[in-house]
Length: 173
Image 1 (tube, one colour):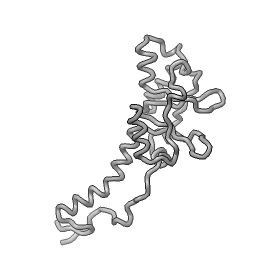
Image 2 (cartoon, one colour):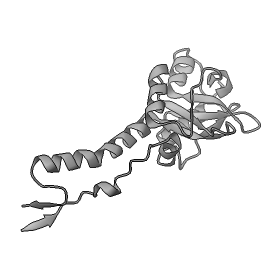
Image 3 (cartoon, helix red, strand yellow):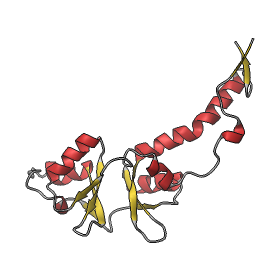
């Protein structure tokens, strides 16, 4: 008796390159407000880390322009390790500012984003529009790993099925 194997035909497997914008649209940051004002107390940022289960926030100035990032690492190194009080310390005193932030253009490939993260030993990237440098969003290393797994899943499944004799579309029980 034959049964249909639940793998997609090669014609349905996407071969288009994955960009930073594609990753952001499927990111954990896409559906939440991941911005924090630089005049906010650090305690507000820590609460957002906890509530949204994220490790970094985009810091905005009074004109709502993104001017840097505040991460869990910033909190540990610049607040907790220095025994500062998180309710009286402002984000503007401890966040990572330009030129020390690394950004991704929305057309950067998955590999380019990973290389940027590995080069600076960071876990988050701000994503900006190539044309006008407007801020679009943020992605994490976790988002990139999910995309790599998704990208390779169909290929791995097809090769595994082929190895055990199931063929491309039909197999035996």
